Each structure stands twice: as C-alpha cells, then as structure tokens.
Image 1: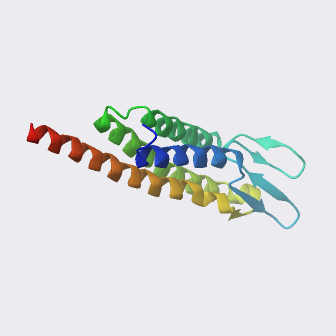
Image 2: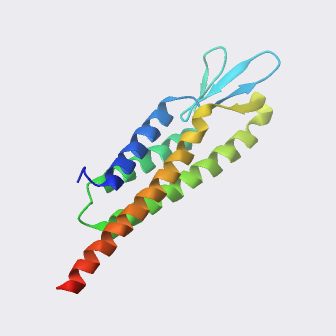
Length: 149
C-alpha cells in the first residue's frame, strides 16, 4: 500500500488540506480595520466572529476525508479513481465558493487580499490528477497480467 506513489500523493493532499483548514485564507482591509478570513469564520479587529464562510470549511473537510479514504481502497482501483475525481471536483467547488463569498462580502468588510495558503487546494488538485494517472497505470498493469493468463 505505502510503496505505491499514488498513496504518497493522496497522503500529501490530505496533509495540505488539513493545513489549509488551519491557516487564514486572506484578509479584508478597510481604511481603519483589518478582518481575517479563515475557512470557518471572519474575525474582525475587535475579536467578533462571523461564521458565514463555514461552507469553505465543510468543502475542505469533505475533500480531505475522501482523499484519506481513497488511500485505503488500493484493492478497488476504480472506486479509488472515482473518489479522487470527486475530491478534485469538490476542490474546484471550493474555489468557486471562495470567490463568490469574497465578492459578496466586499461591501461589508472592505477589499479582499488573499493569503499564500489559497494555492494549497490548487496544489492538491494537481496531486489528485497525478494520483489518478498512477492508479490508472496500476489498473492497466493488472489488466495486462490478466490477459497473459
């Protein structure tokens, strides 16, 4: 299980997404205040929390669970591919949700400046794609062994 490269890819995806859940996504700047946007809440300068972006956290959590579960489905390669594709679709949905949320709350909190951590789901999408390629390669290898018999 661990000697397969797709396992390493999926494990790195899980770690990156967990880190993404813990790091702020960006900041909202006004002339007087700075509000920090995390995946779970917007924390204003006075410490008040607005839990409007909770959907971002849920999307990351769901994608993390799918990527981690796909690691243990190494005997069911087609299901592993489906879970990884679904995880990638969820991460694309994360970016769409994040963009919609940032644009819709601009008037209330000021201009939005993304953090460096916003690129972690994109790196996870690339690693998911690499994992899917490796899983397909394993599936082709197993099918070629079956044709020899």
